[in-house]
Image (cartoon, rainbow over all chains, first blue to last red; front, side, top):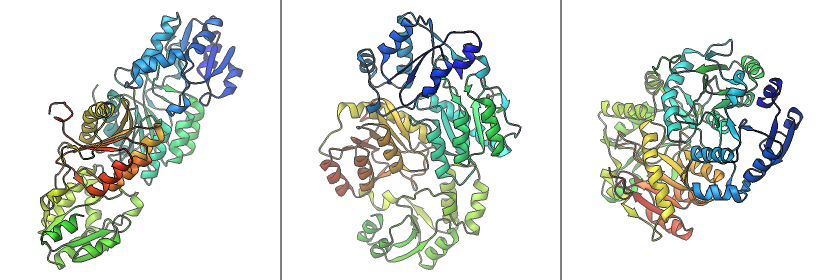
Length: 259
Length: 259
């Protein structure tokens, strides 16, 4: 998605995909493509440089893998060793530093394709119900606190009860877990982590988020406006409309929570 | 367990079990027993009064059920309606009030059977490793924060990464989830929620906690000393020893975190 929009904007796209995480058909939408294993950091950088890339943009979700699935090369292994005992944020920002130290500027995906930012307010014609909004107001400060502790970006709430806190399993798995625990009607609140690097790991949602919410019997997807990425917005909104799910771009102002 | 110890202390035990939650063989260890469905609050109270109980003690875990599995009677339905949108704490303390308003004193299980309190320090002969202790120190303030938000009492951590935050699914499910996400070696940190009513919903662990940790490949169970209940301590410690799991009664002092 980021790749397509970037090419529309006349940018030459050199892409690296990760086995088990990236859809290989991405190759059809970019100029040069290579698939690597998660952890093959040197290979990424060499491929980028060989193809005269000057900027790197991180886009798309990585299913945080079991340790077994990573194949760190020497460069990645050194980093991991140094980072032992640190959370996502530390790992990601160190990876950024490595790219930059190799002369690759790390860009913000929303700078390349600002149209992917989640707008403020309801994206669906169906507005969140009063109950949904109340749950989002309840969830917002908790989701921010969870983010500040570098635990995750999302919370699932129903009727003032936190059903699930997203951990390394990712948003979709947390949504489905909440669905198991509630008989219907949970709300997703996904936020930008205070202090998070805007260039990487921005909160994101998309068609899959809607699919998971439908499966979980959820009623409303709330995701921080402006700072988050919403992939496949048209398809996602259309599917949400069809299943009576609302989507709303959140801010503390829109929730009446001050800032 | 609580029932047996209370009887050893010469107390007549009138017990109510909950279908799907309480082992029916509890009947063999008490003086009078009735099984009810979760939510049959009037029935509980009537049975207690009919059997001239004067104090009520809450002991044993309730698997927080899907809404479908609760069968609230009129009294419970009224409460649930009033409590719509509140977390565990509010629900539990309101239930306590109802018992007390019916002349049933709500007691603290650890007053009846102080021997069930988790002692401070290692319960197993195997001490937690340095890595385990580091993860417990990392987890403790986060677990407290999660508790303060009325989300849950437990966190699973490995190498400075929070693998799972316990929600309504309960500690065992959170442990198993962490096991799925880590290739081995997670640590459980279960704490007393700041502000929690000591008479009900004290943090608890026991033989099942050890079993779950073994299944998840976990290395250390840390649970707040003094304020938490440790059921079946001897069996739990024996099983933990056998599988190289350590158990430690935590305090902020023992973790070197001040108070």
